[in-house]
Amino acid sequence: MTGKIWKKRTVTVFLMIIIGLICFLIFGSTKVSADAHVQTNARKYFTSYVVKSGDSLWDIADTYMTTGYSCVDEYIGEVIKANRLESDVIYPGQLLILPYYSDRPLYHTKADDEPEEAGGSSFAGAYLSLE
Image (cartoon, rainbow, N blue to C red; front, top):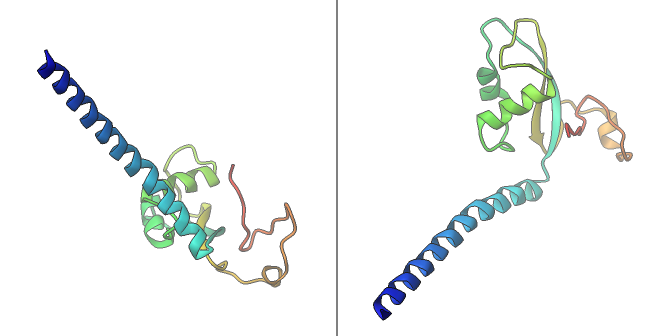
């Protein structure tokens, strides 16, 4: 009987260790990527892009996606959300708003040198939230 109890406890301890490792991998890696944004002082900005013939969201992501995103699908999802697209289909001549992370905006304006007002926004190099 003691052999069965010992075996059951060993299996329970083993499962607890595995669950702990899985939780550490999931939540530990999330904290590391969040800390990376804080350390670089990168902020989210937006720029515009006119779709050319033959472009796809994946081609655009290859060019404009910055290190603030964990994968191409995350970036494309944000582009779709920012532009209120129904799908990943885009057309030549279509104007897209593209997000990117940077320490400074692509286009420097005089307003970038002035302190930000709470709730204010300017499109060129602005920090905007999609939530």
